[in-house]
Every structure is written in structure tokens, then in C-alpha cells.
Image 1 (cartoon, helix red, strand yellow):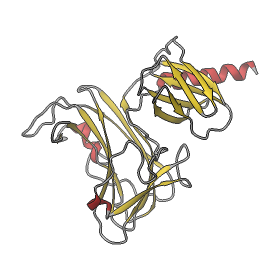
Image 2: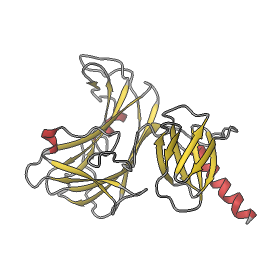
Image 3: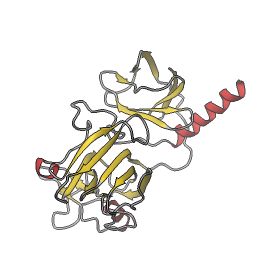
Image 4: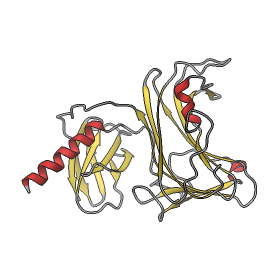
Length: 275
């Protein structure tokens, strides 16, 4: 028993040391307050929505209990773009990850389509002339669709460095990043899960000696001494992130997790909980 406990502690420490903070809200599409759109995400306009529809999938998902399912319309072949905008710091390198599952389609169904921007009265997007950020428009550093390998989950990932300015005629300071992904054409049916965008970390870093103060009341996790809107990450002892939410009113509502030991992390501080 002692050896098992030490092993689990070691695994948790390694996971947390390498863990990155996800800047995205509701990255696993677990929360749908109004039942028609995932919380925190910018959904297509009414015109674009005519090309496809999105729902929560509870049967096909990569992690957690849900994924985002996008079904192309029976007619038309327009672009269905879902996005979320987060702040960034020029010069810092960020990691982008996303999981996708193509159920049906013709090979031109899904792709990444992200960009740096200056948030203002009118958002100004970057020209993406710098080499590393070309991967934000598709695999291989160009405007390419995800490989058409149906019936299984795949992950797309790339590391990109935030530029100082948007370039082009406006050439404004970069303030933010627009995490966008697109679904095209008919008869595409594509699932998305495990979206990630956060500052890249390398190697092992020491875990803070400060411990989080947490209490459990049913499925409600109360966290003290932590700022409102801080990102709360929950990991299994095998290293899988099972939930990621922002602190609201001093607590988060845990997903339907199985009984067992979990690790709660905020920044460099971590502690264990038992369900």
C-alpha cells in the first residue's frame, strides 16, 4: 500500500509539474447553460448557422462526459466557425491542441483557422506572415484540412509565438488570440473535444509548497484563498485532466466523476481530494 501511495504521489507531481494553464473557458464543451450552445464559445451568426448545427454529444467524446457535435446542413456548403478570444503576451510561445473525430465527410470537412488580433472597436486580425503561425490555418503550415481518417479521435497540436503587431496596413499591437475551428460542406459530421491554448512550458518545474484549501460538499468543490475566475484544473492520478473550470463564487461544480483520488491544481499550487 505504501509503494502504491508513493507511486501515485510521484505521478501526480510529474503531471502537475508539466501541466500548462489552459486559457480557454469550457475547453471540453462540458457546460451548456442554455442547452443550445457551449458556454464561453462564440457561435456562428444566423446566416452561417444555416450551413450546420451544433449540439452536445454524450455518446462520442474524448474526455469528460460530452463533446461538441457539428452536423452540416443538407444543402449548402458554407463555413461554420466556432471561436473563443483570449488575451496573450507578444513574444511568448503558446501551445495549441484540439481533438477531432470525423464521422462522415468528403475529406474537406474540418480544420483549424485561428489568428492573433488586436481587440478594439473593430477587431484587427494578423496577416500571419510569420512562419510558425501558418500552422494556425491548417496542418503542414498552410491552408489544409485535417486528415480524413474517420471513426477515431485525432489530436492536432502546434506551438506558436505571439507576434508584436498584426502587420498589414493597420499594424496594431497584438493583444489577443482567436481560437477558431471550422466545419465545412455536406454531409460532414464532426466532433470536437479537449481544446487547449496556453503558454508553453518546458521540463519539470517545482511544485509550490503552498497547498490549496478545498472542501467538498457533495459535488461542489469550494476553494479558498484563490482569486475569482482563477482556472481550476482537476486531474486523475494517472495524469488525465478530467475537468477544467473557472472559479465562480468561490467554487466549481464537479462533473460526474467516479469515486477515487484526484488532484486539484491552481497555478503552481495543488492538493488532493477524495470522492
